[in-house]
Image (tube, rainbow, N blue to C red; front, side, top):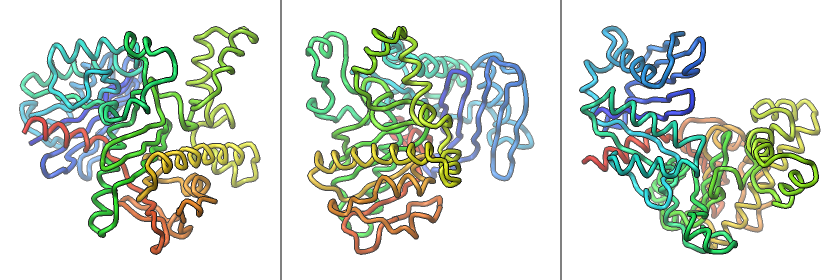
Length: 397
């Protein structure tokens, strides 16, 4: 069965064509700069790697361009659009009611629309991708996987804010969680890895570190706490987002310094985090500058790692112990520096890092702890597209 997984953004479409149940990627790529001059489409299939500058005024044109490549007589991997049986969509926010993978219906689309205010930068574009796919792949089943779904198992003591409860009951103000597709995928891979080695796996902490960052406490395979909240802004220090901040700072910026609420929102989401601390949002640049002696970048790295360390400690308390800690996503998988800083001086909690293993890069699951360490520290490559394909396949079958 061919499943086309698409992740529709404001000006981009990420895609993978995955054959299930074999879990093999037949083709993948990206359409970027939709609606702008010199839009680009990237297409990879086997040994074929193509990038082409084309006119793509809207998402429908972009998805049709993808289909053209997939069906191309020389580099394509399917004969026609009817050879795609399922289109799996990533939608960031499912709100209170959409807590599991579902097939698209008019009611589902309406509910996605209803929670636009909770994810204004993501859900409208996610929904647009669904509507376009319904036109282009009219005979395929359309399936939605929600980033927030993995966290619907959190207990109320974890998801409710300490404000008047009417806001939760009447206005859905609560913690929802994000990056759930990634946390679910890597936690299941880690549990499978530990079980194969006869090791305990009941208590897992997953650390997703990319441009957006989050951390999850998982007990017996289900999420019990998570660092992101009603929106993807709090918790860990991110590329351009501040993460946790004293709310007094927000009112000071507005009441004393004269910023508007929208300006403060833009500062916290787009101008803060590692960018605000260093002038760089890419961790590779910051690590390079730190290695060259830039003290500002060095401090930012230690601030970043210290925030991760505090969350790991609090989640060990919430879980009453930990069997495994998982690092994943672009920074989590590739930055030995951040992993080292986050885990140093944690021996009291049973966390030990093998620095030689930590410095080795790889594309498979790998432990970076000494063999005798009780708590296993794993680097697990994430694969959100495969997780979407797996959930879509399981639903339809």
